[in-house]
Length: 344
Ligand SMILES: Cc1cc2nc3c(=O)[nH]c(=O)nc-3n(C[C@H](O)[C@H](O)[C@H](O)COP(=O)(O)OP(=O)(O)OC[C@H]3O[C@@H](n4cnc5c(N)ncnc54)[C@H](O)[C@@H]3O)c2cc1C
Image (cartoon, rainbow, N blue to C red):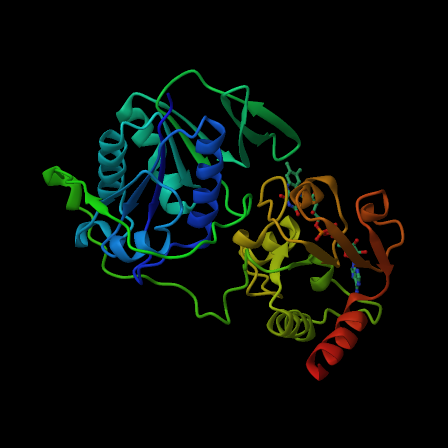
């Protein structure tokens, strides 16, 4: 019989982040599908008791935790040791963790330490005829595969945004503490603090309903023969501020910023959507001044409703890649749109 371990870290305020709650839901469905296999919760972080209480009624058989100041911050050596100890204490055959940067970094190493195998970036976990299956995309989201593994333990990391977050009542969880014997080298890396951009400078918002993509057209000479280097960033940032949309860019536009031609200085390679960029999951997308070439549009795989503003009626979006194409000047449209959104 399988034993499923849901493994995650705890936020410093004693909550579980959305990707963790999504992974918990997927792990619960998996356990239910495997003839109600035992589901064990494994938490890492000092505030584990509060976090366990928030999911006390989820139906887990056991709540395990590795606590202590050493395990609050993300650090390879301590995270890997904690995950290994939890997996062993749980006698887990299937271990599911959210594919956040923290867990993506360590889980392959943990699988190796456990003598298991790992599959990363799963987008769904199901059961058919008693066999657990994962769904995973390949070749930059062009092909989808459903796969299973005989090897145990099987470590799976689930991409954020692929399952509904668990949503149930809190209670009091009986937390069992798991001791980790850290090697002397584990604390060679010391976490001295976190640096992150201020909230209004942060343009990547995975939870936003709308993806706003800016292409290289924003940086090019317009009908008047001029580059609108001051207006372009203002129009885009005003729209992002008012709509709270997430900002994506094309390879051309992020490369321009990287080369110091910073017409859109806030655009970085992290914003790039496409074959060599990201594949975000937003309900809607609006592409502006972007031609819509295949290496870019492949990153729109999971964006359901696609709209485009381009002056060129023959841009690549019009070849079946968008739901609506507005043949218009994006500067003019965004000026009007910002006026309306600000009024609202
Ligand atoms: C191996 C490989 C991998 C790649 N990976 C990626 C990737 O991950 N992501 C990616 O984006 N690209 C990728 N590319 C590059 C991709 O093929 C395109 O070159 C790139 O997406 C083009 O960017 P763009 O549409 O912003 O620029 P352009 O092709 O220069 O298009 C600019 C568009 O702006 C329009 N425009 C100009 N002014 C206005 C205006 N005022 N109003 C409205 N529209 C206007 C123009 O009509 C034009 O269509 C890759 C290419 C290769 C070879």
